[in-house]
Length: 169
Length: 420
Image 1 (cartoon, one colour):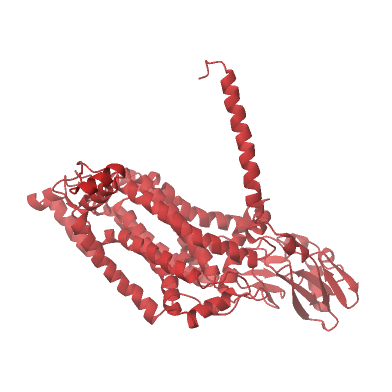
Image 2 (cartoon, each protein chain N blue to C red):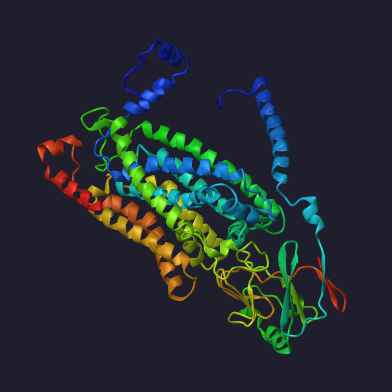
C-alpha cells in the first residue's frame, strides 16, 4: 500500500466518500434535532406569580417550564444562618448574598441537582431542604451541604414586577 | 451447518427447497445434535423465547387501546383495566411478563457463569446476549414510564438525569432526551415509540444469538468439547423439545401465579397515582430487576463516578470471557471457582436488597462493601483464580465415564444433582 503512489482513482474515491459523509450527516441532523425542545415548548418561557399572601417561614411551589420553582419567604433566623456559613464549608461555594438579592426572598428551581427529584421543605440536617431520593441535604440558601448532589439548587432568572409579583424566566 | 446433506422427500418440497432452502433450515433445527447431559438449567433459552413472544403479542394488543399522551395515558391504562374486554388480563400478563422475562434471563446468565458457557469459542454468543440484556433493560424502563403514574414519571426523571453526569454536554443531552425542560409529553411519545421498536431489535438479536450458538453447538454441564453428532449427543427433536416444553410448563405455573393471584406484588402502589411534577414520592425505587445496579449507583457518593460504576457493573460482563483466565469451563471441575461463584450470587442478591432499602446508615455501608466485592470478583478474583486454581481432571467424553466408571465423573454427577 505505502509503496504505491496515489492515483487519480484514489483521489476520486476519497472525494466520493467525503461528499457521501457530508450528505449523510446533513440528512441525519434533522432526524436528531427533531428531538430537541420544539417552538411551543420554548414559547412557555415565563410565569408571573402573586406572592402577596406568603408569610415568613413559608414556601410556595409553582410550575415553570414543567419544573417546580420554590419561592420561600425566609425568617430572620434562616437568613442569618445562611449568611454566617463559611465559604470553605461549602461543596459548591456561593454567597447567600448572590443567591438571594432580596434576602427575605429565595427563588430557586426545586430540583435536586443529583438526579432531578423535588426536595422536601424544612427537612434535613441543615434546616433547608432534603431530597428523599438519594439523601442530599441543602441549607436555608438551597446550597448542597451533604449527599451525592454536586451543585447548589439553581437560581432561575427572575425579577420583582412590583412588591407583590415575581416574574420567573 | 448440518453435517449431512438434506433432500426433501416430496417433489414439491424439493422444488421449493431448491429455490429457498427453508426446509434445510427446519431439518437442521430438528436434527441439531445436542449434548445428552443437558440439565434443566439449559431450558431457559426456550423459556426466554416464550417470554419475548408473549411480550410482543400482549404489547401489540395493549397498543390498540393505549394513548401515548401526558393528559390521557394514565386514564387509558385504567380504561384498559376496566372497560376493554380482557384488558386486565392482557395488561397483567404484559406487566408481570416483564418480571418473568428478567427472572428467566438472570437464571440464564448465572447458568452461563456456573458452566463457563461464555468461554472460547462462545464469546460472540455471550456478547450478543449482553446486548440483548441491555436492550431488555431499556425496553423495561421505557415500558414502566408509559402508564404515567408517579413512579413512571419520577423513574423517568431519575434515569434520564443520569446522563447529566456527563461533563460539558450532559445537560444538553438530557434536554434532547426530554424534548423540553422536564419529563413531559414529548418524552412520553418518544418512549412509547422506542418501547415498541426495541422488542423487534431483540428478536433480530435472538436470531443471531441462536445462529452463533449453532456454530460451536451447546456447552454442557461437564463443559468439555464433544464430537457432534456422536454417542454424546441426541437430536434436538424430540429430546430437547420435550424437556424444554416440560420446563416451560413449570415456568408458566409460576407466571400464572403472579398474573392471577398477585398481579401487583412486583409493582409499586405509587404508580396508581397519576404523575405529578410537583411532588416526588417519598421513596423512589426501580423495579426489582434493576435493584442491584441501583444499589451500586447509590453507594458511590459522587454523581459522575456513581453513574460510571453502575454502567461498568453491566459492561464488565461483556469482557468476562477475557477476564476469566481459566481454560476449564464447568465449575464442577473448579472447586475454588465454585465457592466464589456462590459468593457472587449472594453478593448480587445482597445488592438487590440494599437497592430497595433507603441509602443510609448500615444499609449504605453494606451496599458499599457489596459493590466493592462485585468488582473485586471480576477484576481480581477471576483473573488470578484461572492461573492459581488446581482443577479436577476432566473426563474425555460424556459417555466414557458412565460406561468406564471414572471416579471423577461420579463425583461430578453427585455434585451436579445437589445443584438441581
